[in-house]
Length: 257
Image (cartoon, rainbow, N blue to C red; front, side, top):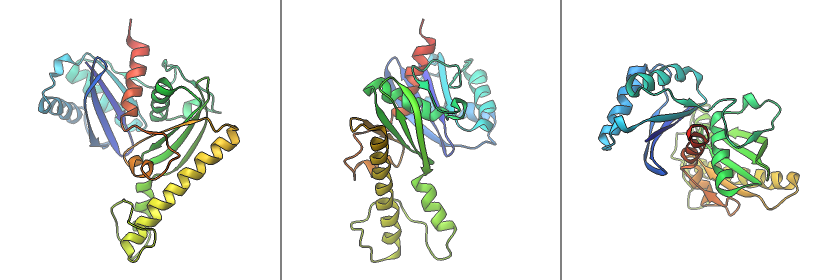
C-alpha cells in the first residue's frame, strides 16, 4: 500500500492506495507547530479507524507547499512507518517539462495536478485548482508547463471581506437563488460566487485566445471548485481526487522497478 500526502497551506490531505485503488482520503488542518509524534499518532489512528493495517503501508509520497511542516512530517513517516518518503521536488520524474522562467518556484501541488490531468487527458489543457489560492496552469500538447495564473482563492476573498469591514458578517460560500440580492448575506454570496464565475470564465477565455487554440481541455479540482464547475460550461471536468491521482502517477514513475 502507498500513503499519498499533499500538504497545503490550509489542509493536509492524506490518501491510501492499494494497487490502483484509492481506499480512502482524509484531511487535517495544517499546523506547522505539530511534532512528528503528533503526526505519526494521528495517521496511525486514522488508518486504524478505517480498518487499514498500517504495517501494509510500504511506501509514501509527499508533496508540500509548507516547508515548515516537512521536517516533522517526514520524521513521522520514518519513525512510525519505517518509510523514507518520496518527496515531490526538483529532479523527480514527472513526465512533465517545467518550462517557466524559474521552474524551482513552481509549487509541488501544481506539478502534481498537472501530471494527473496530462496523464488522463493529454494536452493542451488548463488545470484549475480551487485551493487557498486559485491557480490556472497551462500545459501544451507536448506536456510542457509554460504559463500559470494565480488569484486569491474564494475563501481568502470571503475572509478579507469579513475581516476588513466593520459591519459585514462571515457567510457560507454558496450560490444564492438570484444575483439580485435583497439582504447582506445573499449580497455577499452573490458577489463572491457570481464574481468568481466571471473571473474563471474570463481567464479561460483569455488563455485560449492568447494560446490561439479553442481545443483546450479544462480540468478543475479543489474543495470549492464544484460550486464554480456546476455554474459554468467552460470547465470540462471537475475531479476532486486529481492530486491523489497525480501523486500515484509520480510515485509509479519513480518507484516501480
